[in-house]
Amino acid sequence: MTNTWSRREFLESATAGAAALAAGRAVAAAAAPSAAVSVSVFSKHLQYLDYGPLADTAAEAGFDGIDLTVREGGHVLPERVRDDLPKAVDAARAAGLAVPMITTTIVSARDPHAVAVLETAGRLGVRDYRLGWVPYDQARGIAGTFGALRQQFGDLAALNERSGIRGAYQNHAGDRFGCAVWDLWSVLREVGSPWLGCQYDIRHAVIEGMSSWPNALRAIAPFIQTVDIKDGHWERTAKGWQPVTVPLGEGAVNLVVFLRLLKTLGVSRPVSMHFEYPFPEGGSPLVRRKAAVGLMRRDRERLAAAMAETGYGALP
Image (cartoon, rainbow, N blue to C red; front, side, top):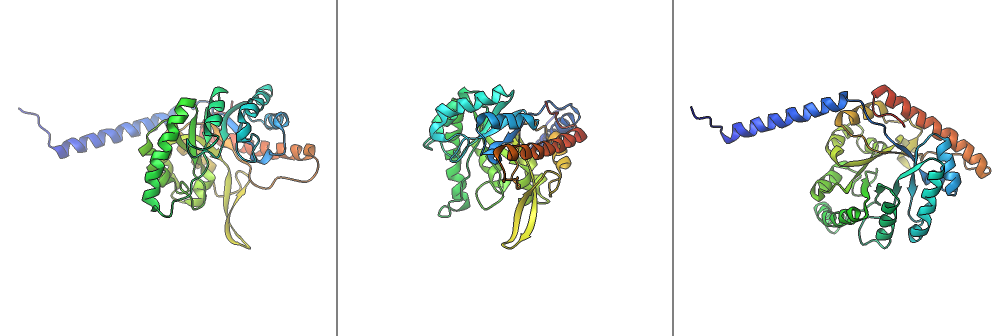
């Protein structure tokens, strides 16, 4: 008896097999104990602190790393990266912290300071960086923008590989490229490099897609390099409806649902916690620092509670 399959039968069988394999992997990921997840603090809201006090503040608040701003107006200026980034990393390590990631404005391998920033960071053991943002090219349109970015990001991925540091583009609420996670997914899958991915921001994903964000997360999951944690919601203001950032657990982000889905998808990546709601700005740096430590510690504890409830990772 000859065993022959039609093309349709073969495709149906292969599709069913792939679906079963994916489902099996998801079940295994959900059941398996998660490895420790490093949680860094994004340094933007502590811009008034020098490297030593910055590291001490992050350590006192309970974090194990710093996501350092290396950009115009940041803790490290791009033109001084070769001199100043080593100082910042040394200060963090002296406080018992790591600098696993940095935040930049780099969007192209041709950016003036791209080589210096990435080579210096890679040499210092920084493993991830966030890119800047890119507007849509209105002259080229959506498809033309995607086409240009595939080449631009492909070249950047090659530079990342040579420098030993992964790049990640953040999905951010607004009207630029990547605000809709689907267009970021479309370009990243064409670039096809492990050296360029997504920094997934749950606050911005919820702001842009209140009910649909889980679908986009499932698509972008294979490309996620780092994860941003913060909360927010829409609010009516004198300027109309505006997205605002609020303390963790007080906005529209369902952190438990998010972490459970990350666990199901097998996504375990370094976390950067952002604090972009108002912090006390009056008083001396010492007074501001004390208030900041309290707020940062509170949000970190809320994240730890959600991680414990979901079994997603464990804070070191």
